[in-house]
Amino acid sequence: MVCQNVRTSMSLIHRPVFLMLGALVCMMGVGRAGWAGEVYTKFNIHVQDKVDKAGNHQYNASCANWTDPGAGHIFIPVNTAIEIVKADPKEITFKVKSDDRLVHLGYNIKWMMGMDVNKYVELITSTTPVSLDALSEADRKGIKDGIASVGMTKAGVMAALGYPAAHRTPSPETATVWVYWTNRFKSIAVEFDDQGQVKTITR
Image 1 (tube, rainbow, N blue to C red):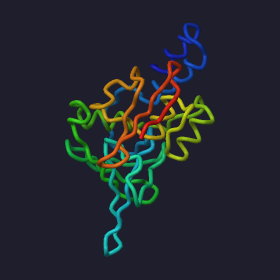
Image 2 (cartoon, one colour):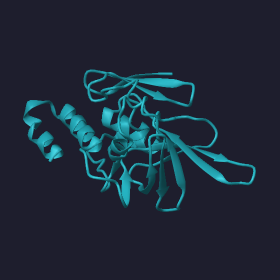
Image 3 (cartoon, rainbow, N blue to C red):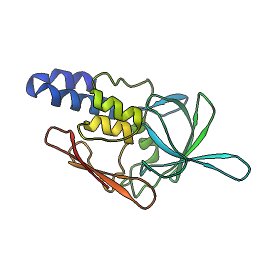
């Protein structure tokens, strides 16, 4: 219904802005009841694959989005089928349905400005795959590569890098700068122009 309402407003704004806003609203979605069963990732989820001495893999992610955590950096792509195993105030654990990998996503309620962990799960997942058709070629390339680049839209950046931590980017819909963490210690700032496209990336 939200996506339909956005489309009816096309006559009020320029088409490029309409497409960007429509895609962003549809990808962010609206609240839904629960996350039981199979769901799909709305955004890339950046993960660090750590291998211990016994050869066991530990897949760790964060709500602060480690977009470049170093050795073992991978990401779970948009529209990957997953199953939420648990979600508590400190961690979300989910299983990738295709290969049974367990991913441990650290959650910090302070970083998310008090957002309930279940609400966050609903924010980053969807009961059905999301459409990327309205996004530009630059957006789709950035999503495929898991990076932000100049010319991408807000919807494209969010799909590529994930939902930004709220304590540094409290209102991504209106903010002109989104802050992401590359790892536990460093961050990047993605700045958008008045058309909602990336103009600079500061590391």
